[in-house]
Image (tube, rainbow, N blue to C red):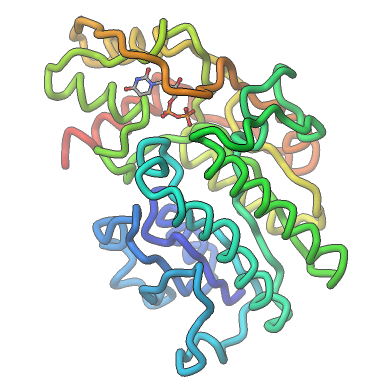
Length: 314
Ligand code: UDP
């Protein structure tokens, strides 16, 4: 059993991860400042004796008086960050700080605690990729001053400082690059494509398609991601690992899947493509397959059905 400090515990991915870690017999201290996380995501965890929670903005260090500053952990897992484009456009400085200052404070904390450090990075480090599919060795094609740079460069800085601590202080680190992930517990108003289109289908509104809808994404169901994270914790490997589902869809194909699922044919309204919106994205998952014997199991139709059930219920 490990003692784990997990940031972003009230987020979509963090709350699933906290639940799964406690199911594996670990104790989790979750941290979140609710800037995009939601307290509803903690509902099932509140009665869990292996879970505790602290509301804190991780871009600031723990106050000396805070009991956490004296606690010892085996793992510090940093999953706190806005991740949906409209959300991080709204709070650009906070997004940079949680991945910049936040990562630095947590690295210091992990080092002092002799804990291992787990950083959740993103496929956005590849920017608008010129290599397809994206392997971990690809350096990416990122606009350093564009609207998405707060997230893309924030995460690239997060990775860079993680490897600085790994090299200079011998910190034992794990880094994952998460490709588009969806599932229950997403904020129905987060503005991402899966949530927007599912909610539009539920409400009988027109589908909003940005650009011509021919850009691609590869959608991973959340349980597959969590399985990859848990497996990586047990493996002695410090390099970045892509975690995503390599089945690639255009946004128009995603809309068709949702029409099939809900049995409703909806009108489409085309809107301008946001700046620097990547044209294609698909993970090369050879590293995860080889290292973790891992592969996504939930395909799009099934994952959309489970997510649709969640949105319809709430
Ligand atoms: N998108 C869309 N309609 C929407 C929301 C998003 O066509 O209502 C597009 C968006 O421009 C992008 C893709 O869907 O090309 C995925 O967007 P999302 O915000 O889910 O995540 P991203 O992969 O861009 O971070």
